[in-house]
Length: 112
Length: 113
Image 1 (cartoon, rainbow over the protein chains, first blue to last red):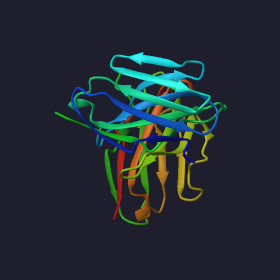
Image 2: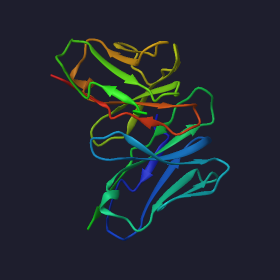
Image 3: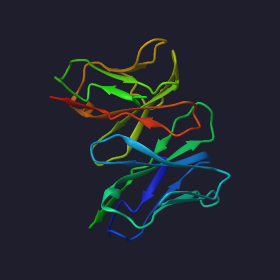
Image 4: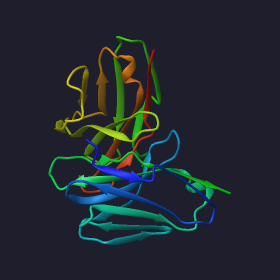
């Protein structure tokens, strides 16, 4: 079953603009992670935020987590053409012996 | 550290044949996960293994699919009697423990003709 749902499905912006992607999930979590996938490649881990954290930064990435609303957002500031990719959120259910469940992703296109 | 190695990168099988997909996790990683991805879709969880044990196979079809992660050697995802609907990209990932981020391989693209 799909745990996370990203919104929007697709996003097109110009270089230099900020990109915001949202993720909603259904059950309680241990942590939430964001991944990037370039076309035809494997996924790359971007950032992990634990259920007791509200915000986390990594370079041009900023992730927020609101466990009361069961939602997270990924902000990419000052986007570049190289940021063009699909972005997925993945949730780690608060349950032993389970693996990450991925959403369907947001496809980001950054034009120069 | 070579990362997660998957082979082959591309695999073509005729309907009814068997497909064997291999995954060598990162050094020091004992948790292995298999996912399937169809075009324009997200990853669907298939199976979670630790050395010699299947932890969660709730995403695996009950028939024709099996997975193992032996004490020595790579993890294997085996699909018997493949059908056209099995055509997809199959990704393997590994982690040092279940609460850490995953490292993914480049995937095996299976085409059933």
